[in-house]
Image 1 (cartoon, helix red, strand yellow):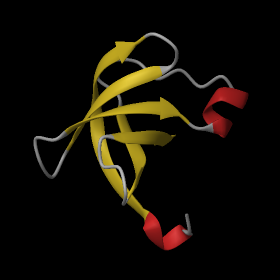
Image 2 (cartoon, helix red, strand yellow):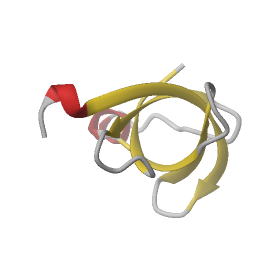
Image 3 (cartoon, rainbow, N blue to C red):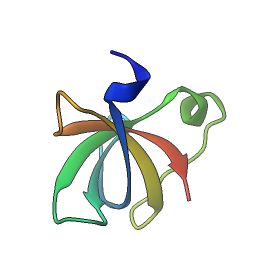
Length: 72
């Protein structure tokens, strides 16, 4: 997967799931994704809670899963 295959969105955390997983609602549409935290958020122990605004990356091949790369 190359860098061109990744799409970035901004959204809001709707629900916190077990195992550092989150349900994120995208701002531009009513689509809800299941996302996990990326490496730097885990490494620096940055907490993501319900109601946080986040930036997520989604693969162009699977639009139902994504990863949280930045907490706004």
